[in-house]
Length: 423
Image (cartoon, rainbow, N blue to C red):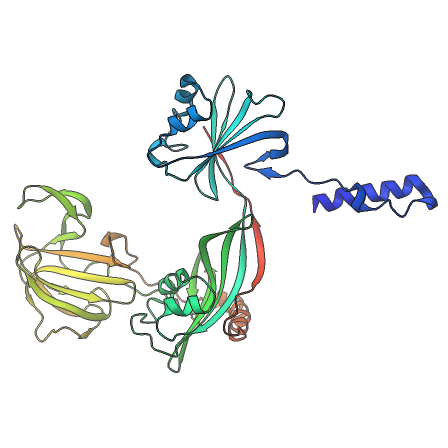
């Protein structure tokens, strides 16, 4: 827009100066003032720019000396705080760009270390060296897509011309409403989503703006809405899509050991990961399922967890209950269990120094700290927000229902400018 403003201003000035005899050749095309090309916050046409790429096993110091820096200059550049520039996190293939005065290639002014298309560190060179962590301006481009599942949701995303990473995003949103391990041929999805771009480079960053998933004859919608300062996804009736977990899998307990990547094992006498929380409790204390789900394992592990039960709650979360003295009567693999249903009793089977429950949680196959799970259900849309939610929901539902299959054209882009951080 700024370039257009300059061009129009010059054109009108030209016509005013020449009066009614103005030449037909006096046009914006011949006198337009071009906007400067800005890269990493710098007008690149004002500098001579040289780029080098970090090679495998090459150190940052070696790259800098290859670019002509002295040993003293290299030392200064590597003394930045790790929060701004950490030389231990450099990766082969990353680029350094050296900006020098055009009239003297021996006068370097800036060094830019490019971490990825979005993030970079710029060093201001001179008598003193100052480093700034910054980000390229980005924009979010909105898209719409719809598709039908033939084999898997991952493949359906690819067949619809969009990223299968959106299948992961959908599992996070619909994890409590749709069993993504049980989807069938003919199930249908519709998405309004945004993808982040830097210049014309697409990034693998996505945001779902609204979605629907139809399994059999039932369709679940995901409508975003901000309530009490928090944005959540709600179904068409205004109920939160986020399910609830119990705060703990037993009533009487004391945490005797927490989640850790390096804990000294009291029996094995060595440090190793403990990806769970231990609850000390008397033998026979009832153990509950923290949420509804399906029993996927019930067994005995002699060299570890003893009697254990594993429950899949949805396509995201799996919980494990270990060192049980015994299982709940009649419990078997494949059973559907409800929240706070007794699945076993505290014991000390397997490798254990005393009665306790070792409770573990996996999110998308990775162990997470059980104490960080959101245990309280989110509130539905309040009466005070019902009218505003209905306006948002009606608009998004119309858009979702109108998306044709195999669409994926960009609808709109929003520009976003991010801040820099100095030291």
